[in-house]
Image 1 (cartoon, rainbow, N blue to C red):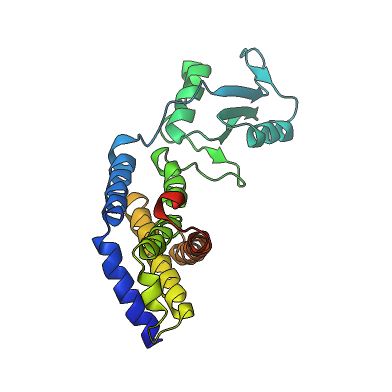
Image 2 (cartoon, helix red, strand yellow):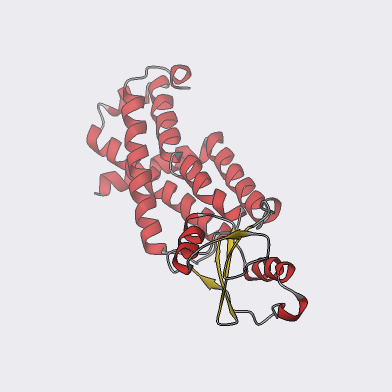
Length: 242
C-alpha cells in the first residue's frame, strides 16, 4: 500500500505539471459559469394545451370523464386539465408552474370565476417538478467531462511515459507493474470524483442524494480509468493515441 501511495504522489506531480490538467480545470470553470450565468433557468415553452371536463361552450378539447382527463394530463407534457365538478374547479397539470396555470385558467374563465393567487393546483402524484433548464445540462457535462477525465488523463500519462522510456526504467525498480497500474487508476478515479463533486456542488447545490452521487462518480471514473489503461497499453506513441 505504501508503494501505491508513493506512486500516486509521483503521478500527481506529473499530472499537475501537464498542461492538459490545467485545460481541464479551465473547462470546469467555463462549465460552471455557463450553467450559472449564461443558460436560463426557464425557457418559454410552446402554448399550453387546455383540456376540460364539465365545461361545455368553452371552446377547448372536451373530455368525457374525469378519470380520462387525469390520464391525458399525466401522459401529455405542457398540458392543463380543468374540471368543473359541483360548481368547483379542479385543475390538473403536467410540466407547468403555478403561475403559468393561473394565467392559462384566468384567460379561459369568465372574470367572475377568475382564479386568485391562492389557487390550489393539483399535480399528479407520479409527476415530479421539472428541473430548471440550465440544470438539465449538468449530467451531460459530468458524463463527458468528469467521468472521462480518467480515460483521457491516464492514457496521456502512460503514453508520455512510454515515449520518454520511463516504463523501461520502471521495470528494474523495486515496485511491480501492478502497483504502477493500480496507483494510476486510484489517482484518476479520485480526481474524476472530485471533479464531478465540484461541478455538482457549484451548479446544482446540495439538493440531491450526495452519497449516491459520489458512489456513482467513483464507479464511473474507475471504469473509464480502466478503459484508459487498456487503450494506452496497446498504443506505442502519443500521436496514435490522440
